[in-house]
Length: 169
Image 1 (tube, helix red, strand yellow):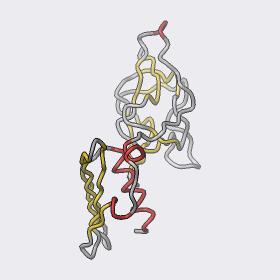
Image 2: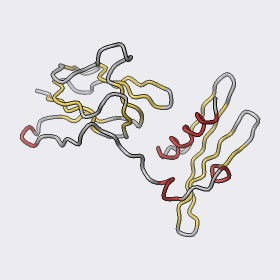
Image 3: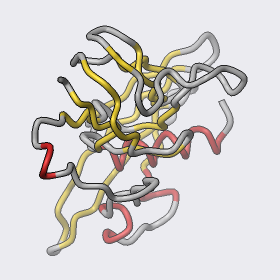
Image 4: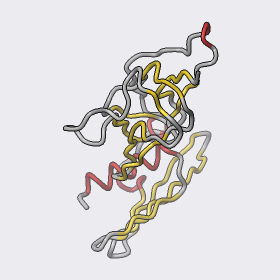
């Protein structure tokens, strides 16, 4: 693992609110612990990384970071902010079950899992969300027709962010 990949992973863990992440490969065992401590009215986040040589590095030792930066949520990028239409209150909003990168197709040379107007049923794969180099297939939990796609391909999504609007009728 390169140092910039480890730094990106530390930032991801700090923003996600997860308390601990363990990652083990053939060459590296990485443990990232995220705890919040209060210091003179400020919240200071400490992230510890355990490297193969049993070195423990605290994020505050690497570089002091203002509390406002470490606790601010990541910006959400969406194609457009679209509320669920009120005249069709029977529409269902499919939301992201996790933080990650949204992909509407299995690979760049393949077609989208679903398009506007596609009929879906429970268990159909409707998108992929990549989180920490893991590609998670998101399956439909409702049967219906895709009315609107709310997120562009290859954009970051937050937990519980609306992805699709589905007409269950």
